[in-house]
Image (spheres, helix red, strand yellow):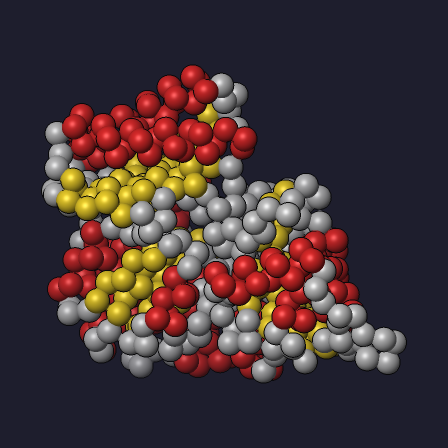
Length: 472
């Protein structure tokens, strides 16, 4: 068996990579590994989620663990329920922003935190050898359903983030991507005092409204709707509600790390501490954190939660799209993130454009290069060599720092930077970059994409598709 866990849990094409047999083994493995008396299970709205969720349930009950099924619910509800119900672990069935053909599993430990790298390794070893022990007829686990927990989550979150003062009623457009948060986020925002308009808010596992990844190029065609509704902010989720993208109806997509910088700003205004972010975050975060006397810590994508274990003074952890606020919980929660921002807007009486004025803005590019799966490593290695040995010379830039925490990131002396890494969930190479001027950024990206296309053709990849956008 190859490595099972990727950047963010287990994910892949249904039947090819993810199937009911794997669900059964995973349910048995995780319940046994944590010696759990009870396991919390939930899932998104994908067509294959019910069968995979049932397989997890059977596996956990097989080894004697009681299962509490919270039904079709957004991802953050599973770790929240683990904490509330004091479960020994939890599994959520989802493929996040992947296409409807895919599915997967997010696994949480008894602290309601996604598994650490060490826990993932241990789980893979147990699963591979079938190292669990089944129980006899009189010791199998019990099964119960708790669909009422969604209402309790909405009430608790709404109460926690209730605005201290109300200066205006913001008009909000929320696109829930036909996903699991469709019946939750709008209710939370309304309870805070916002006027909410919904888009793609009927749950549908085929994602007919738009692809579930809330990228700039995906959301930009929807911006006229936000303008026609005269809203103060346009929010968008992925398929399970752990991600949040934000669009200014007038100026367009707001860079995700600027959103994290905004939240870091308010956290550091309250107290000083560490701000833990992934390797693909840019200068806006660095500027805000340093200016307000915080400490910026860089981690691997998908592993920002591990930083909470290393830094006891962590005020938040995040990566573009995703936020963990440890004062609320140790899990990624896009619903909480949307509510946090709406609370600020209501208290300060400003729209998203005015709110973001306090955060620096640098031109940034975020692309994904889809290539033949069996040739990806070869293409990636060639791109790494080009970046580390030739790019600075071609651009006539001096290298200030090279980081290999996750992929290869080159920071130049003029504060521009570029990062490439292999996706942990899809056969793609991620390409991120930032510069002081849009023309400078475009030159850097064009050079790298041209080389990537050339080396891909030379190696013989039949696929070379580029997704993403350059955001001035």
